Length: 166
Image (cartoon, rainbow, N blue to C red; front, top):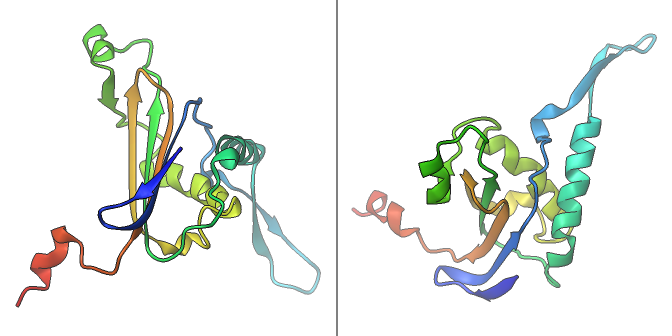
């Protein structure tokens, strides 16, 4: 883990966890219809065993990296999920060490569950303060999750300044 100052704002934290990425995503919730006498039926959503296992795996992976003081204010959170190459992958691709993962799970679905776990572990005060999520997924010769948290200042990001020029 590395904590330092960022060029875009305040604190920055970088962590790489060498691991097999848990398979459960936030979208895999179970549901059942609950009917109570005299009341309108409703759908109850619950965490399946697969989600509970994935949540516990992410908790174990990141617990020891939790900051002593949670991040606050607007944050950029960059998560890169590195998967092992498929056995059927071309040798030239494997030798390059990197290939974008364009198959399931969807990037937005793999981001939510670890974010909830990082909130529970006190990495930040509330995941609503994540203003700039960056999610990447790739096949690589190194498997695991790279996490970078950057506290942002209130300046307009450089790539958006042209929208505010008069």
